[in-house]
Length: 254
Image: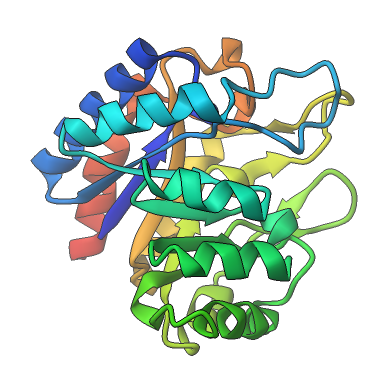
């Protein structure tokens, strides 16, 4: 199984290196393949005043440094023009949930030949992701390089619910599947000018998903999530990740 984990957005070279090396050590110890995840631009923040990230140019240098440590890298892209430059520094490209049906973005991502993780839109049924897979395949990208990610479905206003059947339904397309444990407990726009959430539930989303045998589990983490620039309420504390990873390994074996 793959563990995709890191801070919501890049903050500095030192910060990214600290989290990446810590998570790599944990995953190696518990027998998981590790992919470092972080965003160079949070382009869909609730408020214009919210921090968005370091930007593409500076972030590419950070991702290349993480790669030099023998750690795979993943980041999200928001525009077709970002796919090629990002592919030079990242092993994986991620398509955000709100953009999962954007044809030009999917085609540009697929043409890079990289692993593509597509977040299922909160507004879509699992079977609606068939068209997403077909768009990526049209570029020549094999299904082995496509991952579909469950991250919750809108349940009224400012709330999400997870239907774990979606993991099995999306696997029927022949792709890899991923469970996003931290965004599944997010409360979109729940704090008025930013999103809320409850990180206490996030590990249980990861544990519960193991019975469906996902290819990957996605979790955002930070050493001080309450003071992180974005998604703090649903990020797991870095100090808790050893126990979380250990339990995922135990439940996976069970």
